[in-house]
Each structure stands twice: as C-alpha cells, then as structure tokens.
Length: 146
View 1: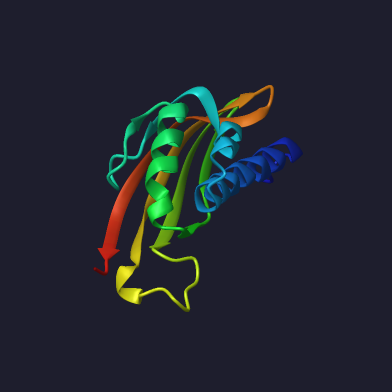
View 2: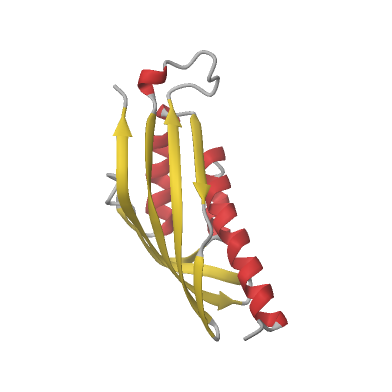
C-alpha cells in the first residue's frame, strides 16, 4: 500500500530527530537534546553504563562524562518506524566510536571504544513536532581496546 504524504512527512521528521540526537551527542550540543525529547521523557542509558532519568539529568551526565572522549561518532542506521496517528515506536540500529582524541592521526588506536545496538524510542507528535517521550538503549556489543 502506498504511503500518504503525511506518513512520508512524519517519517522524514522522525529521521531528522534521530540525526539531531547523534549531532547533539557527538558535538556536545547538549541543549539540542531539548528538540529530541519531551521535557518529561524517560531516558534509559543503563545498558552502556549510563543513567536512567529525565532529559536534564541525562544532559548533565553526558556533559560530565563524554568530554573524556572528545572524538565521538554515532551512526544511526535505517529505523523501523511504526506510526499510529500522533504516536510512533521506533527501533533504530546504531554503532558508536569513542576516541580519547579528536585527531585520529594522534589517537592511540588502543584507546578506542566501539559499540552497537538498538535505540528504542516511543515518540509523540507535539506542537513543536515529533519528540521522544521514552528512549532505551539496547547494547548488543561493545569493544574496549585498552
């Protein structure tokens, strides 16, 4: 069955939301996460060793923790999106690489940390567009080259 223009528009906006999440985390643009999550969102980063909490608590933890790895890259693959009116569930595969240096020419490869898994989002349409009201990371693998 062909997609409606509204469904195509919703899927494009959801893809942009996922891209903003990666941009915020990789670039240290913590306030950009306010355009990803609802103010009362429940975020579960426990699988890779982070907190469970509100967007503000998670932003504070990210801002405190991630500067140890200034070289960050999160790649989000094709998302599976189930739309139901003003709600959606999203399952998106990801890989991430964390480096103790932004300059890979200077980075000691043994210090890289890589991982992958799935982001599970529950989204709702708001007046400001789609926002995640719940995100959980499912860590499927992690390598630490220490």
